[in-house]
Length: 283
Ligand code: DHB
Ligand code: FE
Image (cartoon, rainbow, N blue to C red; front, side, top):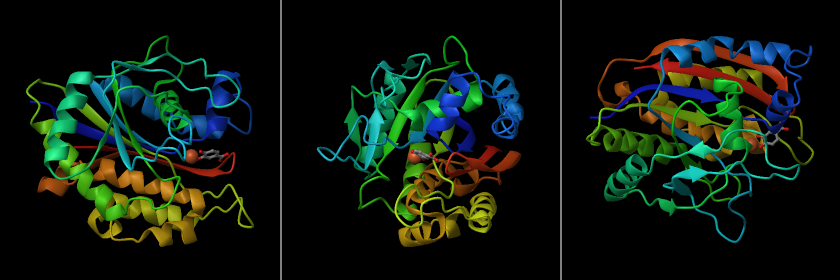
């Protein structure tokens, strides 16, 4: 049986990818940010997953206004890093896990969640920056990755409650897969940031830290927060945080088990226009 052993939560920011790719990680602006992931890289080496189920959002790269899936699961054998305007990042191809992804699609759709099945998808910074933060700059990513894209770009976006319930369905799906796999689920995006309009540059440290507290200790209560509160408090792009509730919903305590262990918590401002938050929870 496959098992979800841990969840990882981290912001994504394209400038973080550029800092890594251009060798700027030791510059004074970036060093404190990357230092927050030193523990995480060692933890991942010590706790290597067989598969990462990576919840992320596409930024009008693979999808566009032509097609807006709310939830899309990548079932392909591999996923190419996308060209986001400056050429594709010089990072390895992302290898998928078609068997587990197909099983999760079957199980979650029969569990009443409508997923879009994606057999071809390029993956942008929403997916590659979290991989870089957790893995550094390897010649190949350490394990297969199932990309799971959530629409948080074009309204209407899914509610936190639905994301939390979807995480529970993903847990049931993983646990009904008949191979012994160690699966981690990663929730990415956020924290507070707004890239546009009169409030561009908005950061809300109080909201972000309260969100981290509640994600750890009261995820079911947090899941009831309406989307408008994310936008009002965390900015228009702060809505990316609903994706963290998918990963949190897949943890054992939500299904009646014991609370997860907090292995690492980190918060840093600024990284480009974004507040960066990061958590590692172990079942
Ligand atoms: C930034 C943050 C994002 O989440 C994103 O998708 C693009 C840019 C930023 O802070 O610059
Ligand atoms: Fe983003």
